[in-house]
View 1 (tube, one colour):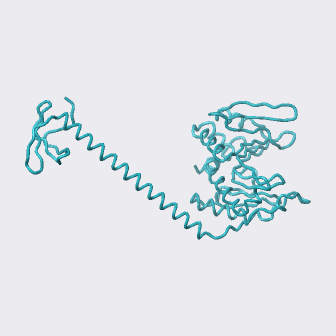
View 2 (cartoon, rainbow, N blue to C red; view 1 turned 60 degrees about the vertical axis):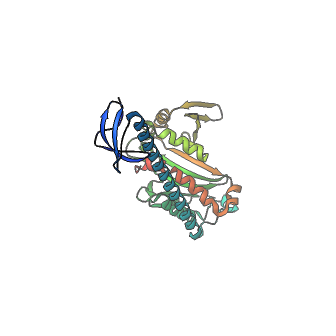
View 3 (cartoon, rainbow, N blue to C red; view 1 turned 120 degrees about the horizontal axis):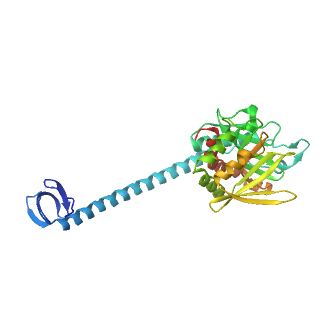
Length: 313
């Protein structure tokens, strides 16, 4: 007959703790701490003992939940206090002139201020050291981990970025490939290899695109450098789409198939991959300084993808 009892061991029922003195089939003799003895059913005492153990487990689980709730509440309070005492953003927002085409293209004069704020925000949010690089003569700022960015090879780096043109503000993650970088320990190769080999990559990309409404845009050098495909989420897979003046083509792909496509893309030519979002000039201006919070949240969500590319994940 199955029960948990052993002679000489201590157990408990609703009347208190007792020691098992004898076992005979379903009959057991127990002695309470005050000296009283009782002959009782082992099966009945087993049910009482199991119920008591279950109640204790539930009580411990409830206590853990209570402690976790209090910890989250305390964290929210500290975060709220930190926001109240945090100094004003150094970047005050976009202006209409930021989106005007000048003689030498878009001149976004405050990109260094944006870069400085974003590097500070990401460093605080992720507890990692981020820095920024304003692209010379371009309306773009790159944000990356210190030591993982080569200013002399900007297009081959992986980075988080913000860019401005007459269509609006674009921000997200980018990684490039230059001629001669088909293999090796370059960010493009790391990302493509991870996409092909790690099952977590597909749900990660899906989550990023769904949560923040991001586009995955792929560029490559043909006659000129330009957009060759857009990839969106479709169910549990990706929908690859290509449009040009002559045709529109689309194909459902797994993460592995997408990786094979990227490996075969424009051999020994320049390529680029962007996971990004765009704000119209009007929306960017209306957000004023709060645009930093929106951009920071998206860049923070993309840090895992960036870390895979630079080999720090």
